[in-house]
Length: 135
Image (cartoon, rainbow, N blue to C red; front, side, top):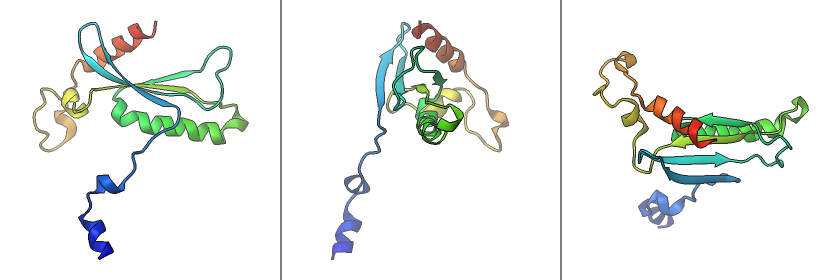
């Protein structure tokens, strides 16, 4: 009976959310009214006098978790090499928006290979937004 009750329970009711320590997520709107989700991960060690080095990433929904956890791992095991951590900042999209839809707005369905890939100008917009917002 217990196994049956567990099988009938939705997975979301059984799982706990995955949370990364020292991580913030903020929603921002640019001057041209584009919506962005900004992911920020701070190292465990206090910032040096010169400040943390910063790693900026695009497609935050995909790239941020891996980069933040890699930074944590490198800080744990790279101390002998002088690695003390990096501030990871990733720009993403608002909830419900598709990274793939933004990357392939005019490509249509991908039929046989990624040779059909035609990047949008979103990369240039994101790069400019990060550059202008960090000053």
